[in-house]
Image (cartoon, rainbow, N blue to C red; front, top):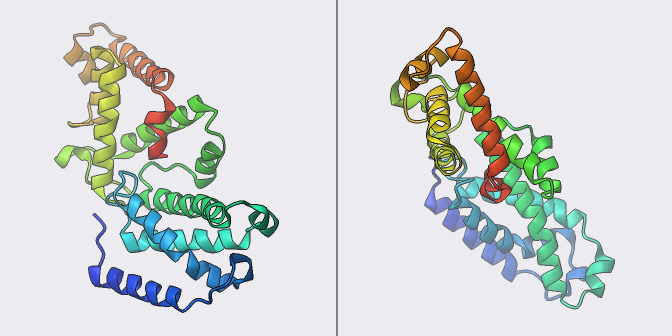
Length: 252
């Protein structure tokens, strides 16, 4: 799991507080770009702390890494402020915070996605999904397809095959993901479908070949491996069909 120096975090917060105290007492629209960025640094820190305890970021990024990504989002957001809208707003601070929060959270999510890496979802695809959550099944399909591709690429062996991921990514993260996938499989698949996926991808065991799975499940005949392939596809299709996007979107 990523770690950080608590002293660096404390020093950052102290420096931030000092910079904010030095700001002039002016309306938002009269502040310079740099002053606006300083003004909203506490918003970045607040959102970063929330992300740092989430399953998304756990084992992937430290609080200081997340703050850095959030600061990039803040800078980009400040550059895009529509001052006509802000000035006309009944509550300028609330409107500004709402606008900047979206940019900060978007930047943090992209940073986590890139650093997590184990799911190998291209960034433009992630942005495409988040742009329109109305396409629920598109999000669910991308989630499961990406997860099973990643699990399939994870070598089997000791430690349930979870510690040799071909990326600089914490194994802790893939273990969480595998456990979550198993919980969804238990909810939505029948026992045979569950076993086929569990054994195929080595979710809590070594990976098994189609022939080995057929033997375990008592499926006989020369085309038993074909039946296993059919069950595997059937199980994944069922997950895509049955699982609501609200259960997977936090992992995208």
